[in-house]
Amino acid sequence: MTTLYDFTLKDIHGADLPLEQFKGRTLLLVNVASECGLTPQYEELQSLYEERKDDGLVVLGLPCNQFGGQEPGDEAAIHEFCSTRFQVSFPMTSKTEVNGPGRSPLYQWLIGDGEDIRWNFEKFLVDGEGRCVARFDPRTPPSDEELLDKIDEQLHLSKILLGK
Image: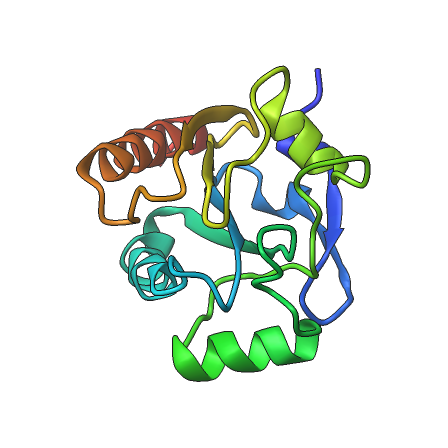
């Protein structure tokens, strides 16, 4: 059975990013864009990451330019924007296609037989065993109670999994 840990991406600087390094951690994967009406979610994503990273949460930003051309810059421009405007310190990947014939294998796995990604800032929650356990609409802010409850539930289960 395929899990998140079977995938390797490129990080925002072009280096390999094997997702197996996150084994046992809870991940929130988000396709992001710098020129979207939802771009202010970066602030909440960064806060969420800072508040829960020591508990085992990893936020992973996957820049995508497939929705209205809202991520037109290269990786250096994306990194500069995110780090200076929103002080993003969570891991970011290189640009990723989430829909269509060039869809990343990771996104094919995430959506399975489900619907295509609707817009920037769609969120997928992956448990400590590398299984996708929830999907959230792009308009769902990172501070949403249901999202936070699901994250906290997975963080708790990951602690049990790791024997902490």
